Length: 313
Length: 84
Image (cartoon, rainbow over all chains, first blue to last red; front, side, top):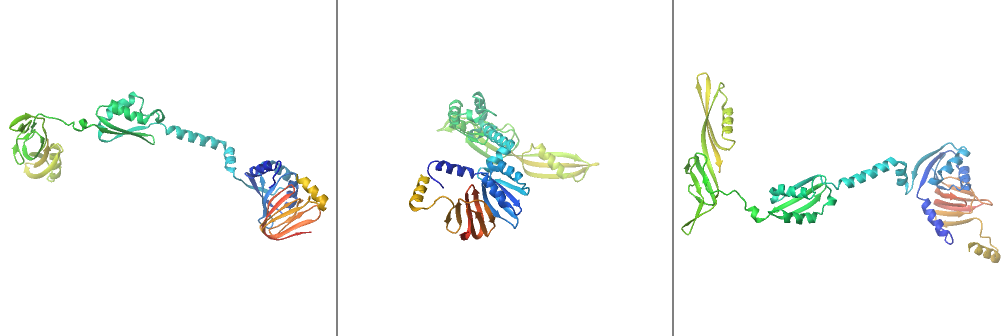
């Protein structure tokens, strides 16, 4: 290393020049004249080493390749083979040599960045998911929908706006997950209480009551009672301090219904089919008991299926 | 400044500081300046031309790390270094 006037500048060039080389292999015994001639012409050789009896490997600065080729041609050195380009800046050289690849990589990165900014779908979760129709309409009105961009939406402000503008929403959580806009909705207490309210509960089938659960109202029948279609099971009132107060009925009643179905078939092994048909006739309700009887009538078989199923009001 | 120093040494001590110089780094590298071309080289010996005579470096796994203009760097396990 040399220091002094111009010395520092020379050192900078020295390191810069080390960054890109071309490695060659020479097959022959007369490498010395080539090296000496190149040295005189200002072409430096690096890492010169014998790898075999007649083989020598060496490197030349990438920028000297043109001069080196001219010299080898002049001196008729034909048995020199390029091995590879190497150095710290070789990847940059590779990219510039494969310009199409460079452009492809550039566009790939650009598309990846841009496509990540688009909303491909909106997903809802939480107890207030039932309010998604109203929320969806509001989002559309403010320009937040499929294929709009995340970068154009202030998620925090949108959360506040939804709480302020949608009735029945007490909390909104919005986050970006990939290209999906995830919205979590929690309803206010008034929404949680919203259930179907009735004035009284009347049976719509004939059967035997299995259970009566009353949350609001007065039970007039209990488990084990036989009930007919149209009978009043739970009244829409409550007796408070001997005073009858009208209330909305909130109750669940389970009734075991038993019916008979008759099927005719020419086959004598159609019990299973008869039971399936009976189950369908029962409206797909939960079957509690099933009993099948078969008898012959003329040239066909008569299947009588007695089916008990659970009917819930 | 360097040439002034060389001149001063030459005038006062009669020593010529231009010409061939060798700097040895342990037994693994040697830096030479003022050399001519390569006379011969192999893994065991590298011989350079000088203005007058030659310089021989002997050792094992010798490799010319760099040679350009009048400078050369030889690396490897250097055993002997002699001028003829």
